[in-house]
Image (cartoon, rainbow, N blue to C red; front, side):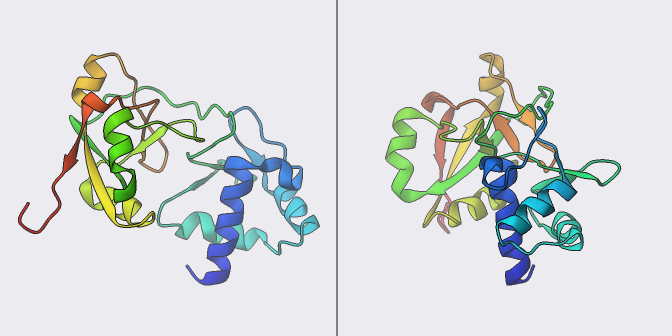
Length: 186
């Protein structure tokens, strides 16, 4: 994705996940927005984004952050919201282990308090170490946590799988996570 399109993708993330009011964008209860209304609101804010840009972002975003409705008239973020939306996620049984990538500077806090959603609606988890490593790398020197998803499920915690294959849960208490040794010898 080129720089201009990446910038537009970040703008879409901002208004669809966190601040729709920035462009007076109404979202329905499930987070869907009319694309034409989104484009008009963006234009009012001086953001030059076209329908073709939106379609290209949805089609080429490697994280599949966005989904289009069947008629391609509406768009929503697949997950990562800080605003209250119902993504109509159904609880599903996760793999026995999941992973969470973070930066090493957060290790002590995570080990002490577990994983919390912060300003988001859910904690985001990965099905594989490679993805978790990429996520952690975005925040600094990465550290990977192994999540005992099987034990969490048995303890009554619900898991959801977003449209873009991100595992979601409300929180991960510290007793269900451990540091994964990703050193060359580990």
